[in-house]
Picture 1: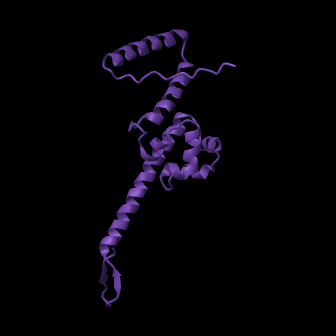
Picture 2: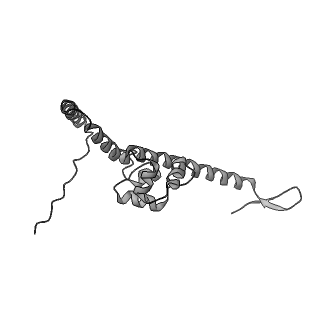
Picture 3: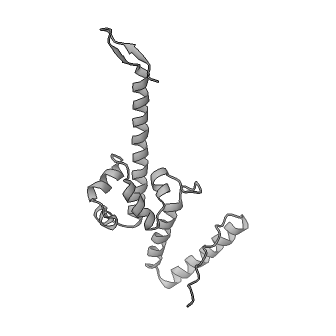
Length: 159
């Protein structure tokens, strides 16, 4: 229901509260676009890609990536679909959470890729030391009941 009021000349006009609601909604949409753009940039930089490389990876113009990252444009549904098909969490990108409400699901996959890339640069001794540290961390997290279940492995079909 739209409430009407009258201006100085006696003409009908929408109640000023409607303008405030519209402005508030626009501000919320802008903030949402800025946040999802920030998450898109986190993904791109974690993958160590330029905007041009990322755009090519997704099949979108570089200008679209730039606009999304700046928050002047929402992430297109088609881009979210492609990212989802590539194994990234579209819920995290668009909404800031995954199905389990964890804000780190997408970032987790990107972090694992970044860690693997960094490990490849280390000496064998440093990799072994890192492995021991990770084993210790897993033991500690396990004792507190904080470990995720191990990933399930798919058995290949036998002919």
